[in-house]
Structure formats: C-alpha cells, structure tokens
Length: 335
Ligand code: NDP
Image 1 (cartoon, helix red, strand yellow):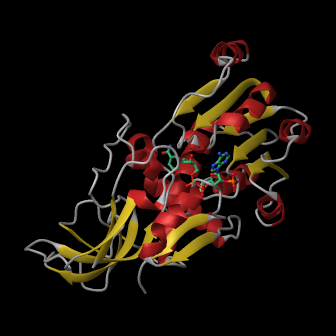
Image 2: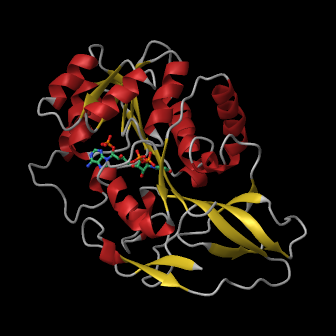
C-alpha cells in the first residue's frame, strides 16, 4: 500500500517537497467495514486550500496526514452487509491505494461509460457547474454568458449547459489550443486567451452586448477585464478564484474595492458564493438525471486528462494550478 502525505505546508505555489510518498501495510478491516482499493483519484483546485492552515470552510490536512481527495474504488474485502467484493463506489479515499470505510459517505456507482466520470461530469465538478450556473446564474435564452477556466472540469460543463439554455457563450482559457477546443469541440461562440497582451480588448469585442452572467472560477486579472463589461442586473456565481490560491499577499494597489462595490450597486449586480455540497448536496439526484440525459443525447461533451500512477499525483496537482491540464484531471491509480 502506498500513500501521499502532506510533508509541509506550501508558501506560494506547492512544490514536490510539500508531498511525501510512504509505503505501509494494507489496512485490516473489522466487523461492519469494507476494504477499498482506489482505481481513480480526482485532483481538484480545492486541495490547495486544504494544504494551508488559513481559515476556510473545511479543516486543513494536518502535516504528516494523507492528502484528501475523492476516489472511485473497488471493494476488495467486505464485512458490511450492503457491499460485496467487486462493487464500485465513490468515496473520499484520499491520495492512497487502500482505504477502509464503515459505509459512511460511500455511494455505489451506477452504470457509467467510465467509472472515472463519477469524479467529473457526473460528479462534483459537473454538479458544481450545473447548480452554480442554473441556480445562481439564472441564464436566459439570448443572454451572454462568460466562463473562465473554460476547458476545465467545471468551466467546460458551464459553457455547454449555457448553450443548451440558448445563451451566447464566451469562454476564457489559457492558450490558443484550449480556446480552439472550446469553440470547435465544446461549441462555444468564442473563447479568448487570457494570456494575450490585448486580452481585455478581445474580451470586450467578443461581448458586444455586455455580459449577463459571469461564472467566476478564476479572479485576478481575468475578473478585472470582466467587471466593466457586466450589464445591469448581471449575475455572478462565485465558484472559485484559482488565480489567487497560491497568493501570499494582497495584490499591489491602487485599492479597487470601492470601484467593485460601486459597480455592484449602480448596476444592481448579484454576486453569490457557494460551496457545492454544503449548499446544494440535497439536489445531486436531480442533477444526475439531467446530466445523464444530456450526455445520452450528445449535448454534453466531456474530456479527461488522465495521469498514470499515484506517484505522479503531486506533479499533476502542481500543474493544475498552472493550467497544464485540459479537461478533468484524474489519476489512474489501479486497473
Ligand atoms: P480546472 O479543471 O478548470 O483546472 C484549473 C484551471 O484553472 C487550469 O487548467 C487553468 O486553465 C485555470 N487557471 C489556473 N491558474 C490560473 C490563473 N492564474 N489565471 C487564470 N486561469 C488559471 O479546475 P476545476 O474545473 O476543477 O475548478 C475550476 C474552479 O472551480 C476552481 O476555482 C475551483 O476552486 C472551483 N470549484 C469550486 C467549487 C465550489 O463548491 N465552490 C467546487 C468545485 C470547483 P487555463 O489554462 O484555461 O487558464
């Protein structure tokens, strides 16, 4: 059995030395428990928050403890009446080959095209896209929806749902290749490279009628370009701020907070943060039915970025915070 623990807390961007690979015995199970072998491990931006001991909506990983994470696992041994050897489940097994459970938080996998989809399009990121866009964003046909990290696990689904709802969709992504993918494969109306020197001008040109819904995944310079384009009564689901997760201090001045608040006031903009399971967990079933149907009808396309081997998880996670992934980042831990 192998696991990856948090060796030290990062200062700024995580580095390989913040992680440590450990070998240990396969855990034994007791009455009422199952032994789970991870097949797929999901790597997600929120893990950067867990590496830090700054206050957040969830407690940090302790130094020396196994890194947390969602997994698809196979039951290898069972002393639990509801689970048989060979069953596939979604669990929060963390960055390790084997974990045990008393059944709390286990979810049996239905019939999926690939088990890993339970960590992406039909799991947490897809659910986040669905609730944030539809509940908070309230998109209406004909409106302009902008989403950043547009080819990632959440953003790609946000844009495609907005297309289903009849909106004009403008993505923001890092680099020409990701932008071409958003337009040609995902069906977005346009996609702008946030690394381009004239990014703000290009975004304004692509949003000639302003922005009605901005689905925020990124913050920082991307939001600076979006803010002046927001229309009166725009909605801003505040999902993530990945450009800030490695920040060690506030950005340099001048302080633009009063400008932000003034814009929200004058344009009656509604900006709302959310934490998917806390706020919407009770609606997962509804999402699963809707998304399964869209996939069946070919209305939602889905791409995964699969990394082989648990030992490569730290480097892949570091890359996620630098935009190295295209699509949902997943580690294949075992066959
Ligand atoms: P992605 O698969 O989109 O991967 C992260 C992407 O973020 C990178 O590929 C990169 O895309 C982009 N990025 C990274 N750094 C920067 C930067 N400095 N400036 C601009 N873009 C950057 O991740 P997810 O889809 O899993 O997550 C997207 C967002 O959703 C995150 O902020 C995450 O924290 C949030 N989230 C929030 C949840 C909630 O409950 N509120 C639940 C799940 C996710 P590119 O190369 O295109 O720039």
